[in-house]
Length: 248
Image (cartoon, rainbow, N blue to C red; front, side, top):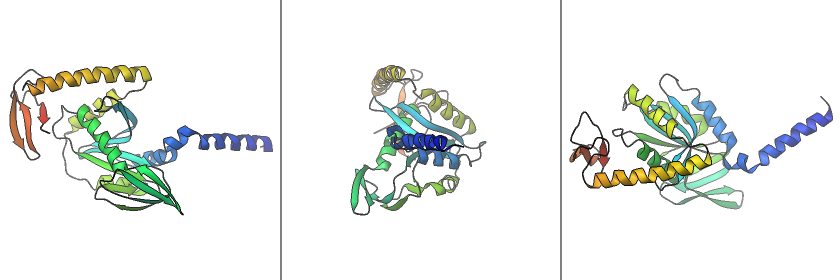
């Protein structure tokens, strides 16, 4: 291989590594997480990568990875920062420290909360889906955070997922949830805008029906009930119709 070919390869790699897209998306971190997720039992865990869906605020939200299983829906946010990472559960921002330099970054737990809210809205027809938030940092980071949520290093991702043993969803629902998320994934920019516009209209109609105690799924009457997670409105045609609306 000539010196010119080697120099050409190095130049291309340098351009890729410095590109805004490469840096912004944390390409290395996401690929590392994808590699870890491939270790999961494919018969038990369905995986989606880099999904963009409508958010509850009428915009869109991008989710790095979603894993659906009988144990719940794991929503994974990937971070490829280096240096000390300081923060707590509820603060708006965390801090990255590299030597004497400090940088502010958005609290990734709050980011992932937004992702989960978007998924909850998308999957509102499913009863009490457990969502597990996981934030993954690469080994380049030194985590010094005070949290109770799953904020882990990438190498612990599979063991973290596997520790959730309780069966919460049927196999049919797992596949339906996977299909619903995959089907809602937005790709083309114009399609995204139209989809969001239609979704906002649909949500407004649905909210109006719920406010008037009308089931938006079958037209039945909504009845207030109590469950282990508090009060909610359920369709009077249960079990034929399983629509529920959780009270705020």
